[in-house]
Image (cartoon, rainbow, N blue to C red):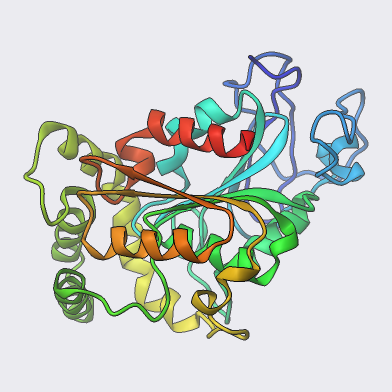
Length: 325
């Protein structure tokens, strides 16, 4: 069902929403241009009706008055808010096919982590978890469902253990876990990537990452996997080019690590993993599913690491089921 008011905007540092979509057409994107704040004229929503009371009155009253941080983000649709956090080898576009389905009933927020996509590499200390909190504050969202893939899953996990009251539902797709004793596949990959980046060989680092995170350790290349590789290669190259700088500014945890705080998570949780991923990730998924109080584990036969790209319909359906719980 199409939303009554299809809100779609892309935001960059200091920009404001310039236009709102017409009713019933969530596919039409309203580009954002720098402009002074202005009052809205008839472009309104109502708190408690459009979003279950999870958005602040300011956002529901006038989306044109909302400023965002220096994180590049895309917000679409109307309804209860869902944040989708991309993997460490992609950007917000990896969620495109999933967002196309979810935005029919939800406000869907995708953004580029620092050093990924259109968000520049950091120039000061940061934590991904804090950036997510700041982004939600900037768009006036008090609490949201948060779903992340890979690195994005760890960001979601950090956020949910630091601010459990701000997470209505939690989705962890092929998420890593702090303190994990990585197996030989991931160790070998990490050592080779580190050397390639130290040598400045982005081309070979890109090929390595495509082989590890698209093909995976147990599958052969197929036409479908080649298509996935083509979809993610440009974003992956950007992240690799920025990786050394981005990691150098990432601050250490200022609270206990998430692996020791799983019991604090109050949100209903989806843990999903593909059985063609590196063996560590199904094992981590089982650890998360047993450690988080209200978690449900979904194992996807034949799927690898980048679940939103590989099986978007299945992931969208799983998120829909999670949000209905």
